[in-house]
Structure formats: structure tokens, C-alpha cells
Image 1: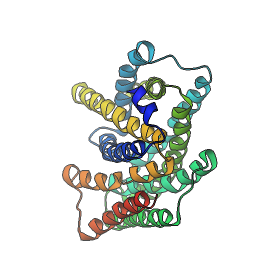
Image 2 (image 1 turned 120 degrees about the horizontal axis):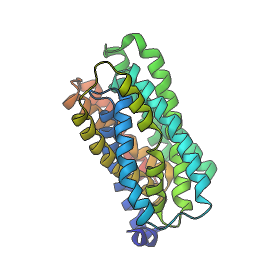
Image 3 (image 1 turned 60 degrees about the vertical axis):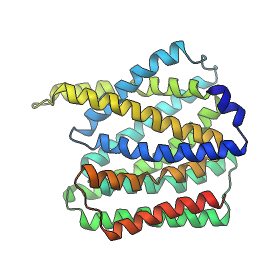
Length: 300
């Protein structure tokens, strides 16, 4: 797989594969977000998910993929710090606000700053038509957030800080997308970066979640929590791995924009599994998000 990825870099096939990977990441990221906002406290869910993918990644990192080059260790340290703050902000938003309100704000803040970061770091540029697509997509994202803000009554008393943490999360989405794209491009083997990233990233939140669990009076059953962690770990592998490979194969900005169609899938998940309503206005706003992504892709 590594040889095939490196062989198609810079070709038309790479662009097609990157597009498909970014869309797959969008679907899976919506699922991943819902797993953190489900029946368990977000910190517990995050802890078991991180523990699961850290344990899964360890044997791959140590025994399967090539060993990282010396220059990769500082890159891993930077990624660890960035993702720690990103996850803290995400959990803070999920604890204070309804999923369908905070998720579009998180995802809407990221693309613009990712495009700017990709321009500064990689010299990537967008055509005028693509900027139109970005505007359409952001209009849909923030329109959806505003609509949910008016109509969702859950957690209204903590909504303002929830939205603040959602914006902060979006900024770190942009930061980690750009930084991790740099990291996976700096590695000779992309799967070396992914395996070691997941191993290191799984070290911090499991001890924090365990401490929180031990202090709970009414502890949730471990069985369902462990199953959520295993499933979430597999989803995280596929979601993050897909978007990182997409950023290696094609433009970082385009991959970031396509991934934000995850908000459409998140709304569908909220409707199907979390009891949220999806009316004609929300459907129209989700159509804007999808249309913006199509314009960005077709205008490239």
C-alpha cells in the first residue's frame, strides 16, 4: 500500500483517490463525533477510544512499519500537543452544547484557516471559482449552526461557552490538518506517520478518563463503554487515516473543504439516532454545504 501511494503521487489518479478518501473521512468523522456525544460522558468516550486505537497502533508502529527517521520525533511531539488541546476543546464543547449546534461551528471554522495555512506552508492557491465554493459551503455551515442555535432547546444555559469552545476547536482543526499534512509528507512511509501518531495520541486521555471514571458515583457498565472504544478506535483509524492520505496525495485545502461535508452526515446521524429533527430549512442548508464542496472540487 505504501509503495502504491508514493507511486501515484502527482498523478490524476492521486487526485481522484484523494477526493474519495476525503469524502470517506467526512462520513466517518460524523460517526466519530456522534460516538463522543452519545450516552456516555465525552471524556469517558474519548478515553476508551484513545486507549483502543493506541493499543491497536502499538504493534504496527513497533513491528510492522519502517522506523521513523530522526527528524520525525519533533514532528510527533508537535502533533501530540496540538491534538491534546484540540481534544480538550472538543470535549468542553460537547459537554456544554447540543451536538447539532456545536458540530457545524467546529467544522465551519476549520476550512478557511486550513486553506490559509496550506497557502503559507505549502504554497497552495485556490482559483476564484473555488473561493466561491468555500463561501457557499461556509454559508451552509454557519447557517445550519444559526438555525440550530435558534431551534434547539437542549443545554441553552451553557450555549454561549459551548459555542466559544466550538470556535476554538475549529481553529485547532485547521492547525492539526495543516500540521499533520506536513508531518505525513515529511515521512518516507505515510503509514509510519499514521501508526506512530495513533500510538502517541493514545497516551494522554485514557489516564484522565480512568481518573474521572473512578471518581464517579454511578459508574456506567464497562462492557458497553469498551465496545464503544473499540468501534471508535477503528473509525478513528479509517477517518484520520483517510484525510491524512488525501492531504499527501492532493491539495490540503481541497481535502479540508471536502471533509466538512461531514456536517451533512452529522445532521443525518442526529436525526436517525439522537432524535434531532431535520426540516426543509436544514435540508436546504445542508444542500449548500454539499454544493460548496462540489464547486471547490470542480473549480480546481
